[in-house]
Length: 173
Image (cartoon, rainbow, N blue to C red; front, side, top):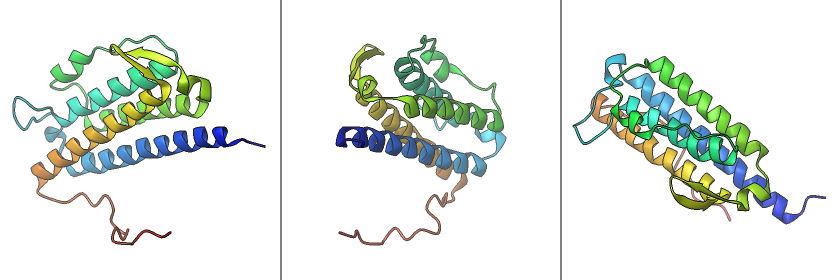
């Protein structure tokens, strides 16, 4: 019989994967709402385009989850993620994002208690596997919000992320 510690590991990883999938869903909706020429537009010189954001998300998720937890070499070039001004179409960015999330999901699905407790040095930070997963999920969500905001600003339309769901439903005890 599975003990309580195994259950919390499974629950944590399942919910982390769910959050990754939700952010992917929202970014795909955002990308569907903008034109091809909007992908590399920047609101100003201090901000990043949707293309930069997706490249950055993929780089971060690869470095934190795929390379660190997946025990692979880290080849990330973070500065390049922000200096790009093109090179990917909308569909290529979607495929890059989906492929990165798929690889991260595979690592998370294989993760065990030992990997979640083990300390890793990532970007100079000393993090447990749990800290790595929390960072990657939070980071992805943060940039998903930026992409949604920039999309709404460009299109002057809502994105309908939760259409068909009553978000005013009260909690049940």
